[in-house]
Image (tube, rainbow, N blue to C red):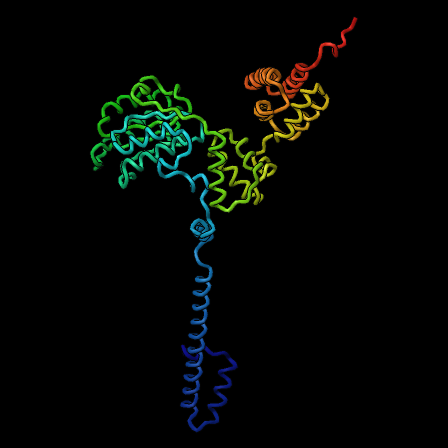
Length: 408
């Protein structure tokens, strides 16, 4: 009954009619039912097998979830041959011999790297001149293979309150690391002038207790923001800003290594916009090369988005010629371009220092008025009126008294 129930009514009628014509109807009917049942089972197995194969194939084709696919794609992209480090990191010096500028200070660090017994050090100077890089190079040459175990680097992005000094720095100072004679563990505190006063006070005792096994290196922009007790415990090294020739030499080396097409005015624009900051100059070089493919003055100032020195120079020349309408027209053009008061007044100062048409007396007077306006802008009065007043005063410097028409 179980087997017969699988067939429909029409199929049963057909089987019964065929069996009635046979010599042994019951035997014929039984054999027909078993034959059809076996065919039905085999067809069902084939169908199910095909379905399972289809589902498995679909799962293999679909793969993991979309989130996993995204993570895998990002990992593949980062490991792809086309991925490139920022040039600032790619061409960061590894040894002290490769550091640009500040030759005398670097020579002192080379002696420390050779002889050992490094003192606590504070290196101060403007951004982008190699302070942190010098400390890292010194640590590599001092510690060699033990660099990873014997160096603790804390940046401004890390939490550096009292708890970090008491726990993380103190725990690192207590850690035992096997080092050669005259070598100590090193704690590097980048942008140390941003540490709170309480954290600096808590650091005093740690420096005294663990001075035999751990040395501290501070990198900061302004050494006067580090408390006096820490300054008295450290050797202070002051870095000066890099010269234009040093920046141009390094940029030329990078251009040759990366096969960058450039012009002389492009390098001059990079130096002008960097203001002694090597990091900014290299970043602007890479951005200009990636965006335009050719490094010239116009492309650099498009990337940097500073007022073009040519327009500012034209405005200064009109002030020198007492042509206030043309000067104010150029100022309005710069203002409408979206440049801030600080951008315009800073570029005016840099251009005035090097403009050839001004006499020494005129340069002094121009810089004096620009300085007063810059001070008012920094105090918070950032308006177009301040810049217009500055331009009017610059025009008045060379204006003859006879040109002023006074009412009778």
